[in-house]
Length: 145
Image (tube, rainbow, N blue to C red; front, side):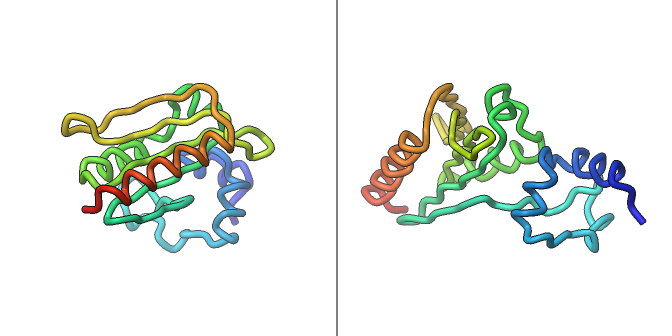
C-alpha cells in the first residue's frame, strides 16, 4: 500500500502542486491504472475549463497564485499550452488564485508573430478576468476560423 508521503512525492513529480485540490477536481478518480503507460510516469492533465467560439478555443487553467506569479507552472503543462497556441486557434489563460479561490494574477499565452507569446498581469480580480474572457469571446465571434 502506498504511504501518504510516497503519494505526495509522486504527485509533485507528476506536476501536481496541490494534490488535495487535484483529487477533489477529479472526483477522486485516479489514473493509477495508466502508471507506466507513458514515459516519466506522466499522467493525463485535466482541463479546468475550455470554451469554443467560431472555431477559436480559450483554455482556462487555475493554479495557486505563487505558481503563476513566479512562473513555476509545470514544464510539461507549459509545453502543452504552447503547442495548443501554435495551432493558431487556442489562447490560454492561466489564472493565479488565492486561498479563497479568487483570481489575483494572470498569464495569457497567445500567438503573436507566428509563435507563442506570454503576457503577465500582476494584479487582476474575478471581474477583470470576466472582462478579459468577454473581450476574447467578442474577438472570436468577430473573426471565426
